[in-house]
Length: 244
Ligand code: NDP
Image 1: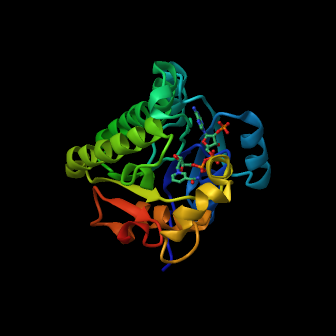
Image 2: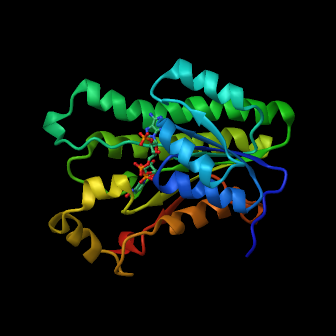
């Protein structure tokens, strides 16, 4: 199945590292014009060095004013992937208002803000579009010591469904991907101890964790016209974890 995005402008958040970085490169290979938004300038510099056609957008999505200015500066967007996310590990009894807000602001509020700016442009132009929000299996299956993260991904799934409901009539599809563990920087930070990750692995019938490419391919499909009638879904990428 070949996916092509000729003439399409794509915005990927959290494109400096991990899933977002590989997705930005994959979108270039599919002929999209790519805007890569991330927090750390050095990551964007090295990305542009590798793929000179990519437009870097430095922005901290925790800052709403900076986010507004950055996303408006990008101009019309046809394909949006809200991928940036953070995790703070602490037991439920230790969660503070500050850490809860930090996670919710990046993982949920910024997705609402970025999507609203992009979707308003799509509606005005009447051209439609596709939005994929990178959620997590942590929205479906509780993970110890990640109250804020699990709550944020649960909220993201339901916000995405409301977006799908309201934006569908404007030919804008909205879906999420919900992977289990991927060994990016974030995955390593949380799951590098085999005593912790072993029981998770044991519940995956396919016997392995998710590769970055598994997530990238699912996102490319959802962005593309091959998924023309797929709207409002949360797509688990978990090797069958939820069956056990
Ligand atoms: P990484 O930590 O490897 O990369 C995240 C990227 O997002 C980094 O480039 C980071 O920039 C950027 N980012 C984070 N916060 C901000 C911010 N405030 N403003 C701008 N950019 C920001 O994570 P992954 O690639 O693993 O995760 C990508 C998405 O996938 C996340 O939404 C995550 O929740 C989700 N996911 C990950 C799983 C995993 O096991 N890895 C499993 C399920 C879902 P910087 O480093 O400069 O902060």
